[in-house]
Length: 554
Image (cartoon, rainbow, N blue to C red; front, side, top):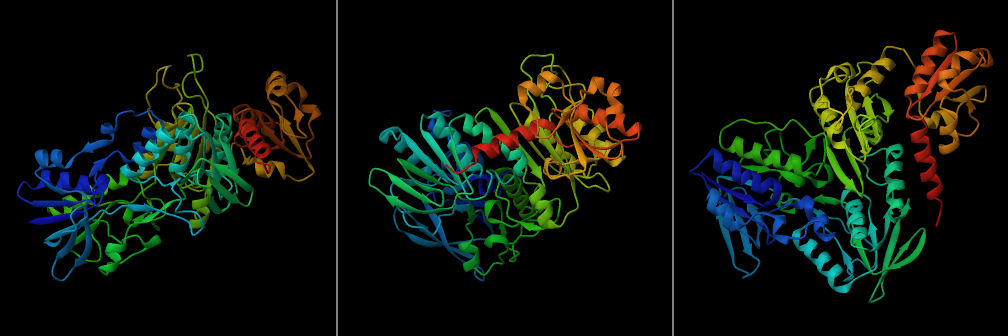
């Protein structure tokens, strides 16, 4: 059996290695257009920032190591230019010598990845404008930063790469501005979670231009001027990071079926519309695990799994890819940001009924030093309690909790299951009731009708004939402020003041994180009051308020 693989990195290299482990006699040829066949794609920004100092550490395998260990014929600087499906042949060009030839196959695996999007605006050909997708891109940026010694940089686009590049360029000593067309960075987050990220980035010196549309670039020779709807500003360099699209030209020219964003259509076995051709990685269309909708989710974890699955099926071992949750995590200065499954935007777009819980449990036992709040948001089915998605932002522990949430979604688990999970506990690492357990408890309270909740958006736009109550202690209100128009009734003294509260009005209660106001609601409800808990507490309100104040036009 002869298998030709087009493209290396996560999908192609994983497929090649797995195929060899499954079939010692297969002839495996891997064609890679760049000069690097297997590298740490997600580590590229950290080489630019200096966290990873040795270039060699970015390379996971070389052509020589893949040949030595797996007997794979790896050809770098080699491009597949066309596919003859009838003849089962690939046309190939050596990019260094210009030599052209054909390579036959029994099976073909396409792993061409995705390419960075460049907007249709003036100035995108400027020498001081960079994109980050390949090792070569990384070295170009790093060499420029080290040789030209720029002092300022604009990052256009606030997705994973854009935010990570802002972080790493600041670490290198640059003054950085980030332009984002939507109103918040990181589409994996909802706006109320993104507020925490915005405020943290500003604290580290990043100028955020949110809702900013970049209209053009002016090449000034030694600088680039960014023209946008919020004005003009000149920088020493610009990173363009507005997203990626599937690199599916080869598949399209061969007549293979394409889907979302031009991604290659595959079945659950990673097989394309041609039974002899498989496709994996950032170029393929997948199913959203929660909604079963077709989607394009370019992430390294799914790409590695897909490469393994394609190899298994070619080797005769049936394997299936059941879909992607989009589980992801990134470092933003001192914060960890993680998410999985649906957020509010994707749930609404898919027409999925949901409710959401916001909470701020501690990363570990508060009596053990250096605990920090884990800002969490969990989406769930309001009828069944099935977990649909999760987001977390914290100084530590966010990724651990989102990994558990991802496992719960994959297992079709409910909030009651979360409350029963037996999770690791020791004071340096968690609490006896882990944040995931706390989320389960709180959702069960909602499902069981023990409390009603509203969002801050609903609370701030509540009917006039209602009362907003802050249940925190006086020192907290003095130190942290309060929402406008709130009355103050400290939880521990609430029973002493029941006669001061109106029984003919709906009461909206909050505390710092939502726990004490839940207790207050339980007290008041059992005394005949109509009350609701404001989800997330003052912590979410304060983050939103700070973000709003900082987001005023510059």
